[in-house]
Amino acid sequence: MFKKTLAAIASLCLTIPAFAQQTLLYRISGNGLTQPSYLYGTVHLICEQDFKMPGGLEKAVKTTQSLYLEVDMDDPKLMLAMAPLLQSNEPGYSLSDAFTPADFKKLDRFMSDSLGMDLVNFKKMKPMVLLSVILPRMLECKTSVSYEQKLMELAKGAGKPVEGLEDITDQIAVFDNMPDSLEARMIMDYINDIPKQKAIFSRLIANYKKGDVAALHQMLGESPEFKGYEDVLVYNRNRNWIPVMDKAMRQNGALFAVGAMHLGGEKGVINLLKKKGFKVEPVK
Image 1 (cartoon, rainbow, N blue to C red):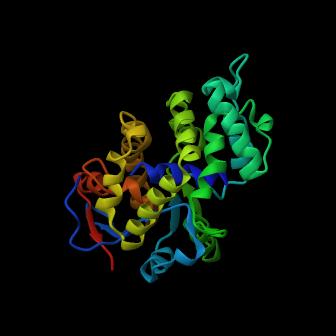
Image 2: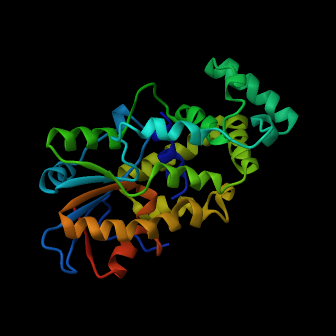
């Protein structure tokens, strides 16, 4: 659940002119590559009835030699490595310190009444862990599907390895670089106005279903909570991924599947690949 949410948070964080063709799948070629690779924009929380696996994406899995996700979610050691990173090791730390007494009391009531969870079990956890529990409530359905999980199933079924563009410590460090007070404010925004947050998430999903990369990227600039943290959440990670992608593409053809909000914009993955000399073309 937490792995899905990291990406959901990143998705809430996604200005370039609109592409002539709206799509989430791109073919990467040129710059000395002997075979094409592919880039696909995912969303990590989506209702089962809204899930659609494009035919071109299945073909990309079959014709490439490896699948790269943001993090290698197929790593059996992932959960073991992630567990200690979710708790604070600061002496005397308590989750309640990130909230005002009134907000923490409201949060406690919400966790008990709406989620059936005791907040005391999260006492030593970082605020981002609560986000992983609350965010799924933004979906207007009971059953969600993960694009990453489906892609991993396809890759493993075809005997293709699953790799990561970054380590889990790098991904969690993204949120460690944000103050707990900011994450606490995000949590209270959800709790204080769930209908509003559901409407925002519904708009994100609508843009995603249209394959509107420009609109998804624009939503990043509309989020006041993330103002000043765009580099930490999205752009720095984009830049760090390019050398990893370059190396993978030259070793063998690869399919890269990352949060759709990482694709667009001047500092987006698509434009960064073009600046490196690669040809990036939309796939119907």
